Image (cartoon, rainbow, N blue to C red; front, top):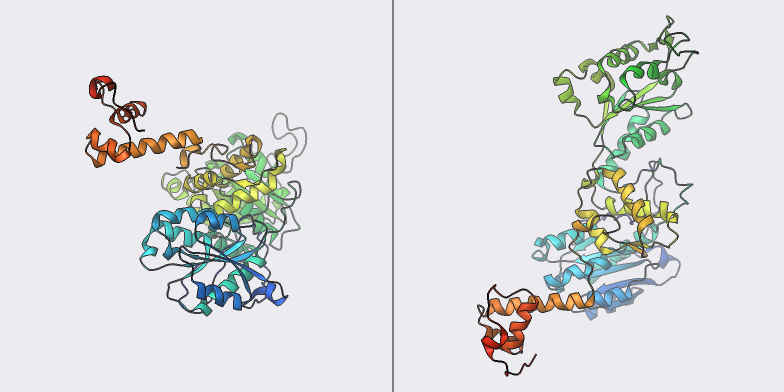
Length: 500
């Protein structure tokens, strides 16, 4: 998304629910400003929302072959949006009062619409407007702007939306765990780095928080390397007791120790010709670090209890969430081993920094596991989307997968809510009945009247068009009286008629 005061090149926002694998992307066919639908003679749909509609703009768009549906409010716009229909959209953010802009978000979030925003410099200083434009709009311009420019940008937005229409998600049994989903710049950089390092044979070190997908990255490197037809062997160095780690890595001969009734091939030897992934390398004990360093230097191993040096051709990929710089300073990790392992380094971005990817990943997980619930789960409620963005995700993608899968099973409605995700505390949108909404509005109106008139009840009652008795009673109902206050009869008299 960028500002386009004139005809500019633009960048599309990927559709939510679509997923990106690490295969080299196929180039998209070129599109004209009219888009592929116009090339086939199909009418192009366009939604135009503004508090004050520009009839000359509508006339120009219709002359250019657009079928324009116009709305003057978020409510009208919501009635026009069709989930299964790809279209362009023009939203005049400059024409709406700041209090009304938030209501547009539900429609701006619809991924089948390529939105172009009109926004003034003053309006762009509003953090809400900046967030809506950044997350949901294909591009934006600052009025006044030529109608031809808006038509051009809308045409490109429409073309990109039709190209980006998500394909039906494969069944859960067919959607492999090796998929990596991401559209943010950090993930695109990760994909480019993976493709680069896959073609080399140097050791790779992957750093990142727990749950960010370090093993998926290692597997992606292996599958795009010349070693892809050989084994990919993974071992979690923190999950194996220290006294067994040597034998797991390098194997042992028969009779090497009590219970060693036959020869066992270690993980390093089993990965010969392929890739060995050492997860949580920071938990490797010092004695095993020395053995691993010797193997990396010589390219040979010795099984426990054996005397034969066995050459092994294997590529090492290691990963950890531990701060190895600190571990080396504390003497817990060998610096010479680290420099052998970290020839090439990859940093996994944490989920909380990936912006729109959070929602895209959530929909991807939903499509993958929605058969876990007999109900037809359609998506996420606005409260759930808000909570997904507000939560800090200490467990990263792994935690997101667990929360969405649990919500799929536990949800009782067609839309997953913040409560289903166990994230109700991270949303300001609260579910309430109509009675509760009325009571809340009534309390706010009374509080505002009392503040305006400095708690002079007579003037506040006149402002609210009710009697003083009714006002005093309602103050008691809503807990607005001070303790020890007099009752209605003592204060105002029992016979005063109430107008509320």
